[in-house]
Length: 473
Ligand SMILES: *[C@@H]1O[C@H](CO)[C@@H](O)[C@H](O)[C@H]1NC(C)=O
Ligand SMILES: *[C@@H]1O[C@H](CO)[C@@H](O)[C@H](O)[C@H]1NC(C)=O
Ligand SMILES: *[C@@H]1O[C@H](CO)[C@@H](O)[C@H](O)[C@H]1NC(C)=O
Ligand SMILES: *[C@@H]1O[C@H](CO)[C@@H](O)[C@H](O)[C@H]1NC(C)=O
Image (cartoon, rainbow, N blue to C red; front, side):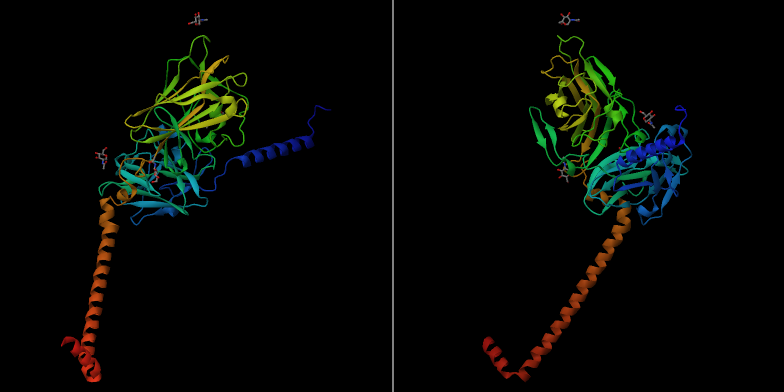
């Protein structure tokens, strides 16, 4: 009798499970601003991760004819999370923009998708254009590549609208975009301070949240690719194999227990479980020998500063206070004797991240290394890393891509000049000439009235005439 499931209990357990599901999903991050648009499409498109991309027409500001094109279904693309929004594109032959209403000021994640397909008379691989927003240059003289169709930026929005401009480089060129995401970032995603790594010391870098950043690399160290489907902020994390170079004996570890997220520390929005539950570690082979560092190498552009965010979660130690490590950026000591256990409030498997800023100067390769600390005593692990993100910071002219500032690029396009600006210049010239002419007429009339008054004076006021005569006598 006890073995037969009681329908009442069954109902109750279903209700409890539904409630649990409800509370779990309500705990997920829901951004105040979330604009997802599929450019050039006429109906909403749903991705595998269940996000819905709306048609772009209501966001679009363009005086030119609106051109949209669509691609034939591309079998090669099917593995891409965004394949369904890479089937259409909006094309701009003159400067155009999209305008987004911002409900919650602060840092926003902007993802722009440029998948260059060819359709009819348009080959999107030939597009050459600038992308600008909020006084900053995001991309300049840009051509799309199917190897990296996604560009991600973090930008602080202080106004009620965000405008993103697409400007063809000249009148013979054009711009395009497949899809745009504008999402409020969780408040804890960007801290204002970071460790500013110099050759011989580490200073404090302030004002990080005021910079515009472009995400260049987002790595799940020792783990598989994480797609937007499995990330709290719809990010993509790739494995580290391609970037990893090391002489030391490293081992990949994974963890099936619970990741202990803590208040005021890295949250699930900073990086998901799938990043923290895998890591690469330096294995202690012979405790009387010093292990060497493990190093990752990234191709970057010289002349910029970069934010390097390193994600740690001690899923390898068997006890607390065993893991100490050193971090090196471009070979310089960036963090000495980093103590995992005290950083995470004496909790194992609890995530923590450290932000570094490095100035690349004239070098094009960024090196990030983790090595053993002088403290390492009885530990069986000499170093560990779970995740790594590398963001480019804007330069002093407010650009992420070259030395030309926003205002210059916005008005650089010949098409723009021949159109809007030229007519604006003609019109203002006309207005100025009319004003000058009008003022001349007024002055002429005033002068002729004065002359009349002058000649009338002697008749009416003899005293004045005497005074005047006396003065000139
Ligand atoms: C734009 O890129 C093309 C090809 O890479 C190059 O020839 C041209 O000089 C660039 N223009 C500017 C203004 O940087
Ligand atoms: C999401 O993660 C789960 C568990 O790690 C995995 O089995 C699944 O394939 C992932 N899904 C996608 C779409 O990446
Ligand atoms: C560990 O290293 C020391 C010093 O290099 C060496 O003498 C010893 O044989 C090594 N032990 C093992 C187990 O490899
Ligand atoms: C980025 O741009 C802002 C605003 O123009 C500027 O204050 C800041 O110094 C720039 N960042 C760098 C690293 O030059």
